[in-house]
Length: 260
Image 1 (cartoon, helix red, strand yellow):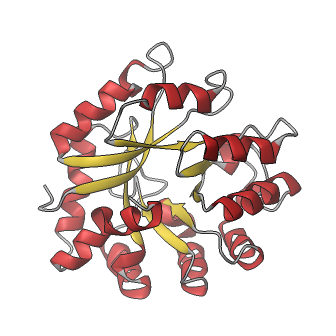
Image 2: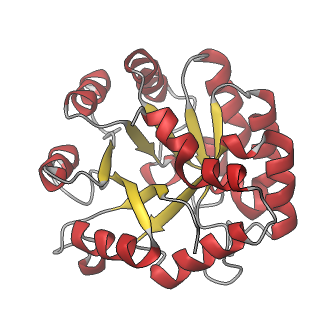
C-alpha cells in the first residue's frame, strides 16, 4: 500500500440495477480497503442511465469523499448547455470516451465541449488507446490538435495510449507540457488490461520524460477490483520513486488541478 493519502481519478459508478458491483457504496468500500482518501466518480454515459449527470449529482449529495465528473450526450445538439449543466451541478470535469461514444476528437461538437470546458475551467479525462472503434476518430495524436486549439484547456490522457499508442501519447504529452497529464489507469495488469498495459520500463520512461507531477493514478472502478487496485499501487511503489514523486502521482497533482 502507499504511505500517502491517495486521491484517485477515474471511477465509473452506476445504479445498482445496471451494475451491482458499480455503486457508490461499492466504490467507497473499495476505497476503504485500498487506503484511498478521495476519488473522482464519473457519471454513466447516456445510453446507460437517463439524465446521467443529474443522477450522479443526486448520488453524490453529501458525499465528501467523492468528486463528480459529468458526461456529454453527443447525439443531442445542446452541447454547450450540457457542459454548462455539468458545471452548475458542481462537477469538476468531464469524462470523454470517443471510441465508446463514437465521436471524432476533432468534430464540431467535440470542439464545442472543449471550448466551453476551457471557459469554465473543467478538467477533461479522455480514454486513449484501443477500444474497438474506428481508430481515425480517436487517434491518439489528435490530442495534440486539441491542445493546440485550446491552449488553456487541461486534460488527462487515460491509459497513456495503452500498449499500442504509448509512444504517440508520450509525444503529445511532451509537446504540451502545461496542459496535458498522463492517466495511470488500468496500465498495470498484463492479462486483464492487456490492451493498455505498460511495463515498468515504460512507466519509468514516462515519469522521466514528463515528470511525476504530470502523472495521475486512476482506479477504473468497477472494472478493477480491490486486488487489482492494490496491485497498481504496489507497482508504482516499486518503481523506486521519491516520496515527493509518489505524493504527486497519488493525488497531489489531481488535488491541485481540481482545486481541492
